[in-house]
Image (cartoon, rainbow, N blue to C red; front, side, top):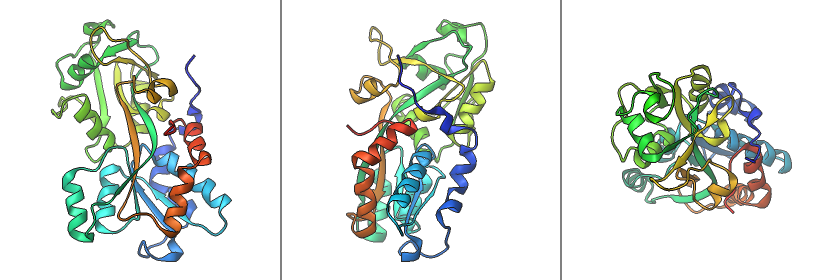
Length: 289
C-alpha cells in the first residue's frame, strides 16, 4: 500500500502561502546580513511548504531565532543568491555552470550545495483517467506533442491537455532536461505559476496531465512510470525514491554562498538532523536516508 503523504497540508492556499509566508515570519526590508532579519530563504515553490514547516518548527524550538521563507521558483532563488538578497536559495534542481560563474564573479565563490531532502517528481492525471502508467518515452512524446490523444496510450479517445510550470521553475528545468532531453515543450502546453496551480487544473480536467512535487498531489492520481520498455512501472513512494527505481527521483537543495557558519550553520544542521528530516516525511517529501 502506498504510504500516506499528508496531502491535506497542500490545499490551494499553497499558492498564497508561497507568496506571503514571510508575513508570519517577520518581514523586513533590511539587508540579508542584518541580524534583526534572521536567516532569509528564497526559491523553489516545490520546497516552500517544506521550508515553511522547517522554519515554523525551528523558530518554536529555538527561542529568538528568525527564519524568513519566500517562494518564486528555483531560478528566482538562485538569482537572489547571486545578487545578494537572500542567504539561502532553495532549489529543486542543481545550479547551472553559468549561474555558478555569475556567483563567483560577484562574491568570489561558486557557492556551497547542500542536499536537504529527496522528492519524486510526480506525473498527475485526473482521478477518473483509466491510464495507470506510462513509459518515460511515452511521457516525452506527450509533452513534445507527438502523442496528442489518450487513446494512443491506452486511454479514452480524447485530446490530451498539457499542463506544466513556468520556465523560472526548477521543476520545469528538471522535467525538460530529464524527460524531454532538453527539447522544447509542445506549444500546446499551458504554463502555470506553481505546482498547486498545476494540480488544481488537472483535478478539474478529465483529460489533463501535469507534473510536480509528490507532496502536492491532492485530488489527482499519480501515474506509474517505467524508465524503459520491459522495465516495471513504479509510483513515487518512499521505497522507490530511496532506491532510485522511480525514474524521476531528485534531490532538493539549499545553496549558500559560503560554508555555513553561525546562525546559518545552526539552521542547516537542524534541517539535516533526525528531527528536520522527520518533518520532510510528514509534509510528503522523502528524507535523505
